[in-house]
Length: 183
Image 1: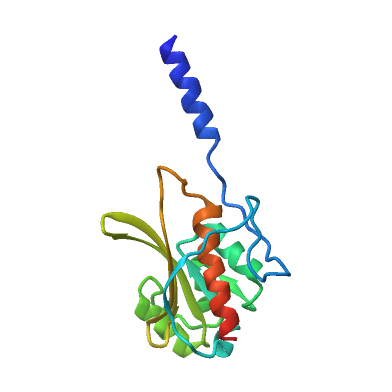
Image 2 (image 1 turned 180 degrees about the horizontal axis):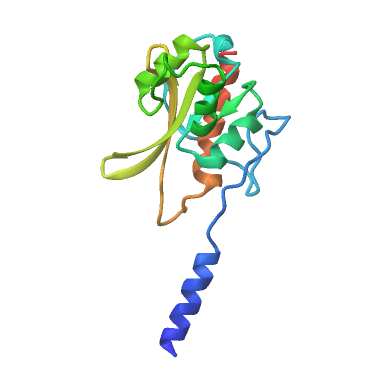
């Protein structure tokens, strides 16, 4: 009986996992809408003041899966948002294989930037600070490999939970604010 109850509870909890849901941008606030009301704020670690006009044509996003790509597209700032596979196809379509032999290292992204056109590299990264896990959203200028924007949220696996509403949305809202300040 106890075993059956344990299996039922585990099955229930497994079914309760939060799926990443792409949020629309609220026209009034310019930030992501949330099903749970207000969205907590991500901590901004780095926010360089710079003109983002040269980067508007293309953003490459890594580490965020389909959710990251689709959420960045929903922000509606960049003309084109691509993942790793689409970036490889872009290299082939523009016959840049000799100039950009690899995209798996930052130096390859630098070579693509110089051979093709300016773009912004946006990626997610998990880090440890004071023995606590954090998720960062980082925007890097591939020309200099400088992180021009970094925001982070503490990943609270115990109390608040880790889902789009309290981890990814705050990160994207911080990015949206930075994009808007540097148009």
